[in-house]
Image (tube, rainbow, N blue to C red):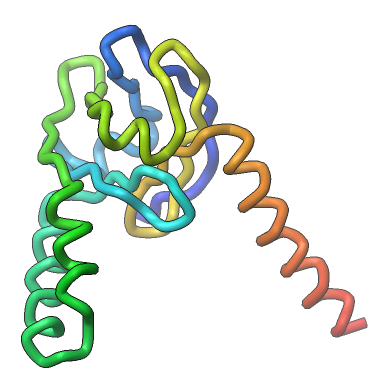
Amino acid sequence: MLFVGAFERQLDDKGRLALPAVFRDHLGDNCYLAKGRDKCVTVVPAAVFEAELTAMSARVGAGDVPLNQLRAIASSAKYAQLDKQGRVTVEEELRGYAEISVGTPVVVTGRVDRLEIWAPERHARVDGAGTGGLAGHDAALE
């Protein structure tokens, strides 16, 4: 199963986010939340995240990836367990990075092998840029 689609949700007053039901089974009970590209929060299945960081650590050792990049990801990551309602807590540090707040709407999107949590305005800009690129590509084929 791939993580695809976009869903509007809201962080509760404790910073918890109910993940879309369609994603929960594939995600499993455990995951990691971390700083993502373009100022989103990524939600990655535990096994995928652990394998990626192990591989990145080897690439740092080989000089292919800067150590500071590994540090930034590892230090921002939070191990999380989904509760019975399928919620995860988005910690304050990650909310600040992604410019999202408790009690406000967010967009949860699939990104093939992970989820992303976005401030709606930022997601609209990123999605618009991606859609524009697709439209430009299609126009070139005509």
